[in-house]
Length: 405
Image (cartoon, rainbow, N blue to C red; front, side, top):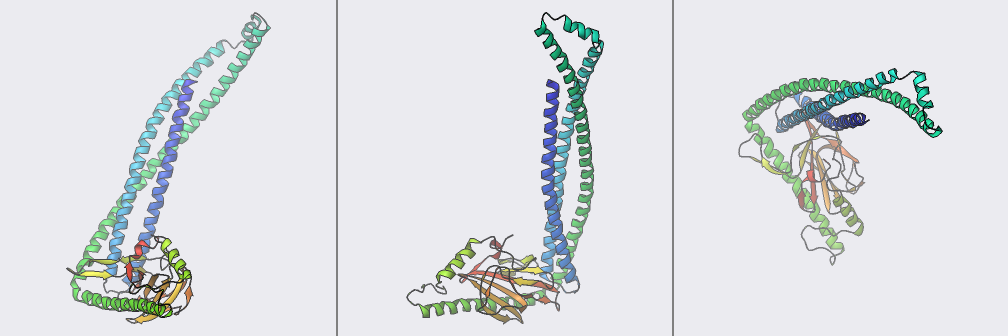
């Protein structure tokens, strides 16, 4: 019995390892699948820009993002391989131990069977019962014989069941070895893709550097449009502050550009603030290709790019949507495209580079409501980019800290 208990404990340990392996590997597979889907999405965006031969910084950003995702994919595969190797080693070590114990138990069982055969004559059992000193002892001997027969039968069944389960475990572990071979092949494939992408990125940087004048001209034009939009935002904030001051001068805050809120708008502002890090994206799906704040240009030397929000590159035909309920305070046209400013109490969200809008000033919008179509620049690099900003009164905020990532 002691050996059988040892086998059962060891078998439980193997099952526990395989269960733990299954959970961990499933997590890694989900992460790997998610990364592959992101890479596929970037490939689709790159195909759209491939329709035009002109170059852009956003395309370079997509290539860089794709390389980072490829690195993540390879790291993920390495993690799974490492976990797989350690699991196989531990499991086979334990299986060897269990098989040795099983052989020992089977030998003992065989000895018991041989002994039983030598004493299985019914006359011997009958004499064993008749030689009892009294009825009590005879009953105990009868019970012993019955229990012994039941024990032999039960032990034989348990050994058969253990053999079947051990066989299944070996089969499962062999499957893990097949998985390992597939992962190794996948790793080689992904590593080759990674090297190719690094080479493409280098070539594209060289191509962009040859067009430095065109890139500088584009950047200057973008900065002019951004400055005009910023002026409009600040103007809108100042106008609302003046209107509020005219209605209730005694209650208006002295801070420049600050709007005194009604109780309803104060609640809206608080609700917006409570959703920091949980706001939906201002479109269904996209890739952030320029971040908030100041950062060096990836191609132009000694040039600093400034962004009051973030740029999100998406597929042609994608529509913008409000990230939270609020009121449209202004719809304007800047640089040939349209922009929308929505107030959420003390907060403002700004959606620019739109081809058309489906809302108007003074209109109330709900979270995720369609507000307009995003412009696709077919004359330049065929890119579709939504420019999104978030302000707390007259202070710019980093949108990436507010939207759900």
